[in-house]
Image 1 (cartoon, rainbow, N blue to C red):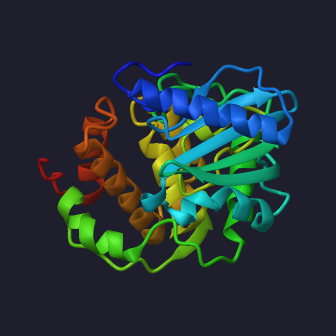
Image 2 (cartoon, rainbow, N blue to C red):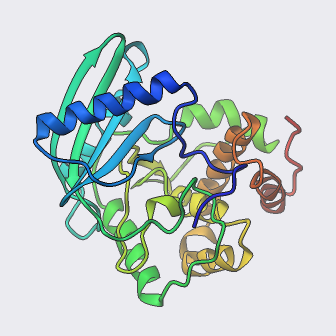
Length: 286
């Protein structure tokens, strides 16, 4: 299931020199790990990451300018590996390498290869309704509940962001988040496989408002009303509570911020309509 050209954000870097640099760094990591990549290139958000299959392994390279390194994201995969319980279905991390060169920091992560495809490719916005059995939804609920039991001081969402941005993107007064939980932090369809469920890409995990993860998943489903309705049905016990509603509003505000920067143009009007439905207030114009 490929994203349309207007929604694809998992793409190579715009500059060809950056593509070559990333491929050379990935090849160097493969040599250091003594593995042989054979799978196609899989690029992450705007070419920030590059992954390839290497036999029984998945070799993922992350790159950032040395002076703009986000340590929380940089170390997220490793901290998730050590902190999350076995009940959370995810690829297991095998080894990590880090180095710097010419102003760029690199991190190579060797994880077990997951043979199941993600439910969405090209970007996080759902483009086709997946046919998922009830057991898949039950497994997702159990995985998020198990994640919520993890104690951490990692912040995936900050109250300061809510204070600064909620009025700007939703047109409502900022509010204090009363209920926090541990979550994935980037729960969308490109980070989920079909049955049996595996949850991918844990680099952004940490404390989130209750309702944020499933609010994100629902928001990324808004272009597919049948699936969006299923998300709300399966997670009504979260989204239909005051705490869950608050977390969902924060998720919508974050995605509206992405839309204001030109991201997810096909999703943006759906986000605005749903936010107004929840708050009764029109979303401010960009």
